[in-house]
Amino acid sequence: MPLAANTRELQHREKTDELGRFFWKVADAGHWKQQEGNTTQGLYAFSAAGDFYGSLNDRDVGELLALLEKARKAFAKAPPRKLELARPSGPSADVLPPERAAVVRVHARILPLPAGCAPINKGVGRDHLWVLEEEVAAIAKGLSTGEACDLPKTLVARIARWHLLDDVRGEPDRWRAGEVRRAELRATRVTSKEGLAARVSGAFSMLAAAGKKSEDGRALGERGYEGTIEGELAVSPSPARLATFRLLARGKAWGESTYTPSPPAGKFPLSVAFVLLSSGKKGEKAPPFVVSPQGLDDGRETYLAPPAKEDDK
Image (cartoon, rainbow, N blue to C red):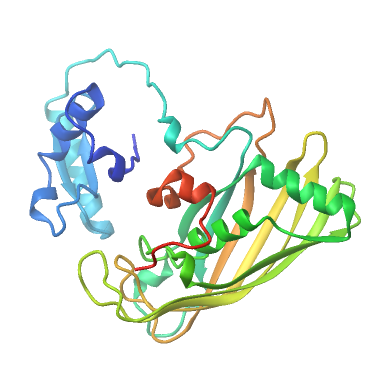
């Protein structure tokens, strides 16, 4: 059974509760103390009883298959004792979207793939965007009183800083407030049976200057992304909820972050797609097992209400 968990949360957990003790029993038997950075990030094979079968922190498919085969044989040779598993308590409120917020899937791809670039650039970046109830209400108000309106500044800043990113090869450094040179999104009303519907268009430009220190102490080169966004949205009335939200950002990106090595040379084509997953409507069944936005690593309140200015060092 596959299981995914955020090591940023787990590796700072003390061994003072059942989850903390279980996590560290498995992690301490693995590779993390021997790898650079001492992060517990990686792949682990273990049983529900905590029997450890091996671990690695590598993208190599052959090595992963070998680990799983080793684990299968070890499990079959000495099956763990049967356990009465406690009912899961659910995720922490800190990683759940605000009440009635919409959740949007975000995917990033390098298309077309430049010739000769590293195979790791064939990957797909995945994340989730939160659109707050009050932001949807502001869009509905703007479209109901005029032919066009700008999208709320908080939403535009959240998209620009934490979702217009090259996360194809790993975890990117997020854009700081001062690195967002331009971020504009405007909705123009169109005729539709879906309620208040609009065509969305805009432009963006982000630039991180060369010479900034990476998380592991290296001096990074210049990094940027600039382009345009096109798409559509629709808002259902009373109360306002997103019925449609589809955007596509296309442009040129360049440079690397701490954990996104081996980008294509020079400027390369990067596309980021946004597709509505859940509207936040009262009574709507929430999608199960949805990972929270990685932007929460910068602080929940910062992600929800991006500051206009901050220390950009």
